[in-house]
Image 1 (cartoon, one colour):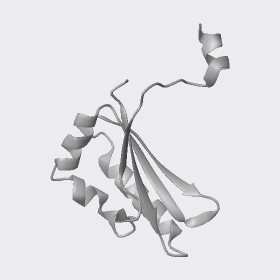
Image 2 (cartoon, helix red, strand yellow):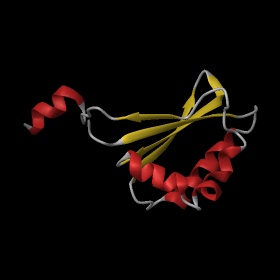
Image 3 (cartoon, helix red, strand yellow):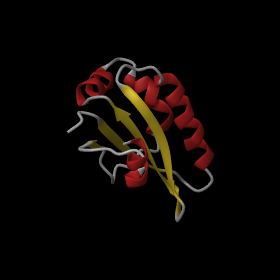
Length: 111
C-alpha cells in the first residue's frame, strides 16, 4: 500500500446549475491549494447525467486528510458545494494499493 488516499464526494445539481458546481469547485480548489498533504483535486461529470458530479481529491496520507478535515478552515473552504452534496451517496475514502504511470508501454520505455 502506498499510504496515499483518494476521497470521492458526490454532488447532484438541478438542471441549469452545472456552471455553479464548476465555479464552486474552482473556488474550493483555489482556497485549499497548498494544504499540507493535498496532492490533487478533480471535478468529474457524467455525460449521460448532466446533474451528477464527483469531486476527487488525492492525499499523501489518511492522517493528513483527517487533520485538514478537522481543521477550522475545512467547512468554510468547502461551503461553495455543500448545498449540492448528494446524501444518497456516501463520502468514499479509498487507499491507493498500487499505481502506474502510462501502462505497460510507458514502463517499458523507462526501464
